[in-house]
Length: 347
Image 1 (cartoon, one colour):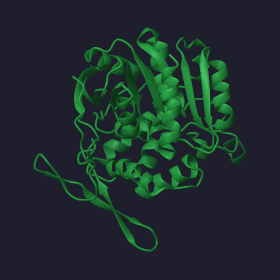
Image 2 (image 1 turned 120 degrees about the horizontal axis):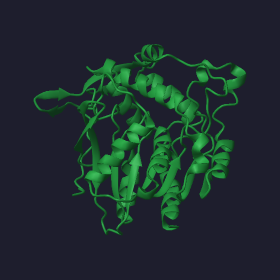
Image 3 (image 1 turned 90 degrees about the horizontal axis):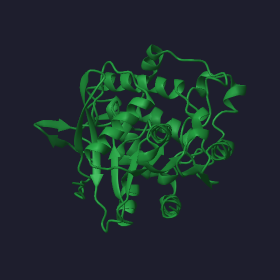
Image 4 (image 1 turned 60 degrees about the horizontal axis):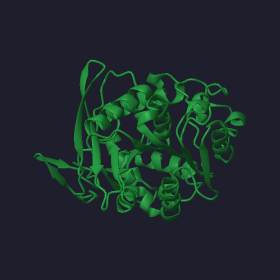
């Protein structure tokens, strides 16, 4: 049964679980002082999610794996379910505000962490694909008795959501993509391929400071609000904890998935009503740092990518936020969630 049990978010104080003390702290050199940030286990041990998490046991590719997920009941149920799919640099917990607004509006919400991410298993050997993650997600919904749902995906989760809708149109009531990746094929445009080994070496260098610098430049158009630090600390804490190499390895594997499995060519085949919610100052383009300066300047242009996607998808509606970036649900929650709820009501 879905739960509405609320948990508090762990901050930079010790969190005790199973006799283990979490989190430790990592330090960021700001040039003026040392700033401490929490560190977490490879499955985000020590970081509390906003609602009770459960474990879905799935056997996949010959091995037993665990998917962590939240299943939150509606306050006054309207009979509909919304599935929230996180991005590559995000987790199910990042949807906290969206979950609260949806459940108050009558929707049951499922928010999983995909295999390889956050509180879910991080296998050493796994062939990551959006097909596989969609199948895992469908198995979770089947286990929860959900036959049809609105599928919402942000960032990488948008690529997964579109793959889910293509694979399971009868189980998809509506597809909603929030600044999805994959609205263009970076490798086809000339971005050089990066081996998984090279990606792994790069991932091992990830810190709070590097995540924040990237997101401030690419996600938020140079702006930053203190509340964004919470989600940076969540991601960075896994890279700086005891299982950091396993985290980095899975991030390298999933980076390869994002780069090599474009879904944009199949947009005309999507058969379900689709809503695109696009922050137009976004400049996200995986691999742009490996491209020439001339090519990089042309990538990640969401002012055009959203329009092109809306034209390619047969039954699509586009909502643009002129002054918002990659995470409009974090940047301007009121405006974003009004657009989301309005879009859900149109069915």
